[in-house]
Length: 257
Image 1 (cartoon, helix red, strand yellow):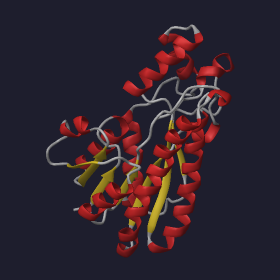
Image 2: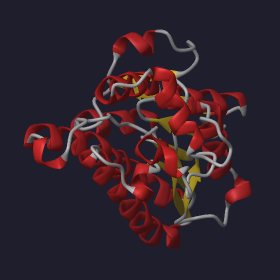
Image 3: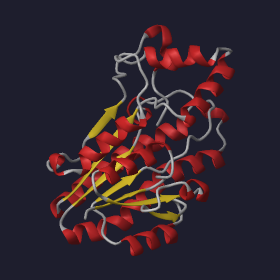
Image 4: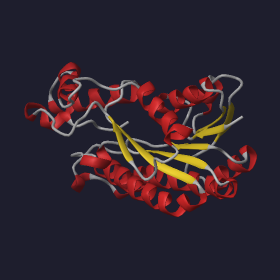
């Protein structure tokens, strides 16, 4: 039985990815910093309470889980919403640490056994903020750009050992996290939540948000044998945001997963 491990897999995109691999017959391992969400997961999933930036805890997870066929490095936080000059260094470091160092630690401890096995797929969760940038989200955007550089380096280092690495860049994803973003942005701009929502949607060719299951489907593809020659790639799952509606430019480009 193949094995998939998803960091921050207790809710949102992480949980959707775990469910997708479970449905395909994978043995599923999930880490999360929130013990409450872990308690609500299916009992046959292997769950571990783990802070993504606690190296000892992350190492212990892989010592127990053993070799994984697919790693989804998904842990991340939104970080502050403010112009660069108003971002505190503590908030900057916290956001960059969870989003970037969390991915680094997961890969660091998954990769040795993948190399030994001569196979494996690492799926990084970046963001369209890591492709386009995003105003007032400097720490988050910087971390998500860095994820792409990390992914490409991992792909180069691990490819000769049969291990692939790719990054998914979600756009605006339906869910509780995005609802918080919409409400905060609406308050800051003196708009309604629906006006901000429509601005985001208007900035995509598909005129729509994406669902967590759309991200999960891409993660499963990248982890499957069907993608055995796909590595080092940055793949946006966002309804296409390259040419956002100029009328909605300030809220058109998707914020983050």
